[in-house]
Length: 297
Length: 318
Image (cartoon, rainbow over all chains, first blue to last red; front, side, top):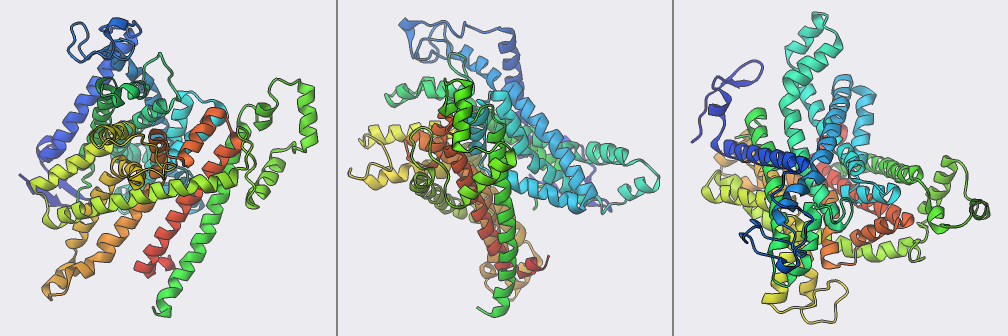
């Protein structure tokens, strides 16, 4: 059921309805699922951080290896050393949660700075930033990360700095685009005419009032990428090492048993990755459709 | 083709070639800077365990420049001559090795790109023409889910299916050419990378959005009203541009995905080489891989710009 309640105005198209009624059902479902995933991840992170786990994640039980889910005492079964999968899945969030937040912070803050410089200043600054963005986009991210690992024996935080930096051009691009769109509106000119200092215009009128939705969306999508990178790297054997669990190295550890037909130890973390990345992506896209109105009909 | 159609392309080609050269120079600076800033250098790895004096003597004997620009200059001059140095692990020259495995990676990425097109285009076109039907929504959701599937796990599923359902074993691709159904070993990694790398979902979404936007344009309505072929009018702006845009934008992601897929399938390509080099801190190899990968990306981008100018000659006058 689609409602057309938009009224054309001089500044843009606004709807009088509150957000929840205006939004399409599909986007609400996307964002709702995403928020559920975010809440679960955050709660599980806290559980792991305080050590409130259903089991000791390192305690082996050789008599009960690769147990199926719903085994008594092990709700999600055990891995190849008989360690509780549920506890390890919860603890695996530690591997990417804080590093992911670091990557987001860098890409959002750095991207905002670059975007404002490119969009607000323009001229040669904009050319330099475009060059910088194209330069970063020239590298496959994983190859760049492997380069940094080879050079610095980088830990996951250093890797996430790289992820954050490579995420900056996209945010910068969106912000610069937004600013060039806003330039056509009168309020920036009006603010200048009123004699407001540039930093007020940039921080309040541009970034806070007009770009915050965009930044939240970028942060959400950035988390999905950070999780993808972390799980890929720990699958490849970089970053978090056994016996510390990470979803990537759990998939890897279960691989041999997977090919023998024992799917669960590898599949459980893979499904966790799938559900989580999907959640962050859907949240980002749902919010994008609701707040930025990108869907053109 | 008329001369007036070629001129703008030539003009853009010249400009884009210059930009590409400048970017590749930047790439070389980044690659060099990362490894220059690294604690220790190839000689540290090579001379591990020897006394500082012996290390210094070895440096002098090898004529390693002291300044960073000296080192960058010598390194770049060698790279431009096609000398990427020798692998620290194997001792083999890097460039021939790279050329050998680079072809495999090229086959893998271009093949998966082709597969992505074959799957995505019908879905996206159908969705753009018919609007929101239940089937289209299902396809969109499926594309979302597929793009979030971890490639490595998806690879295991495919391997399992091939081993246990089709009785094909061992599944060592690329090198295994003497076995029956060798072409299958070849196609499986391409299938995995093409379906689960996220490119599929992105292409469907972008093509669908752009095509439905173009189909709603006034000039399409005019074409429709006068009974002209809508498809012919919508093709350039609604199909060719979005497809080439996504394809060139996704090459870096495919190369990154290739690192994982090559690992899963034991595919002798650049991704595996990069992985091994990162394990061993094999600087010349990882530098070579990064340079070649960036060259791939820039070439794809260049081609996209050329297509864009051919479609829209006005872009050459910007």
